[in-house]
Length: 242
Ligand code: SAM
Image 1: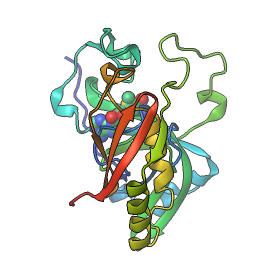
Image 2: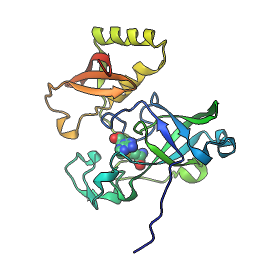
Image 3: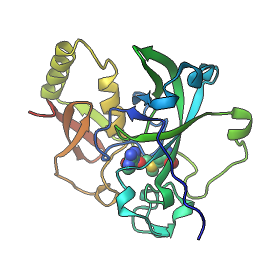
Image 4: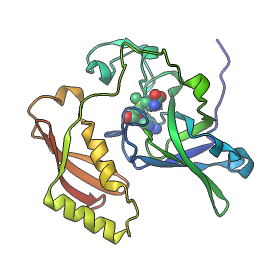
């Protein structure tokens, strides 16, 4: 048997996504999804992040911590293939994989210090809130961007795009929330729209009549929504504990 190695997170991400449902399937699909990596221990050091901002984008290497206990299997059924076709785990970005490691290239917004704490601010995240980050590396265009690269399985971003409409009640609740929180998340309306445009419902529910009312949690709010044909109605925006 090969050696076992252990990893210690260098930080954890603060992201709007409080549950897996609704998180974009890859980074960069929702530019209103902002995240902040809070650095731990020896990584929480000015020198560790020195010159990081020379790079416009960075790779986040992280653990799919919420799935680790469930283990992995050599074959998976990726949503990209409709959720019912089997393929090899290494041919996919499945979150159930040996060692549970995820990787996302995200836009670097900046590095900041608050008291003794250092943060790395990023845009376009696809990570659950609290995800342990095990490393940060710069995205190096001359090597990471491969012009001739193609993927027969996933050559372009998912095409499913719903028309998101806020009903009167939801718009009023959103305005009220922005007022009470002093516009804490100015990009919130955009985030809700971008997340729902992608139709987070499981593949078997899509393109079929569906009268279910769904909920998604972003930051400390719960969003209720429903899909009719190609239209997604945002019905209500409530505080999570309401
Ligand atoms: N870009 C990464 C990659 O390719 O390794 C992640 C792709 S994976 C398909 C994206 C999904 O991972 C999200 O939609 C979300 O459901 C799930 N996810 C994100 N953070 C997670 C975590 N900490 N634990 C388990 N699942 C997570």
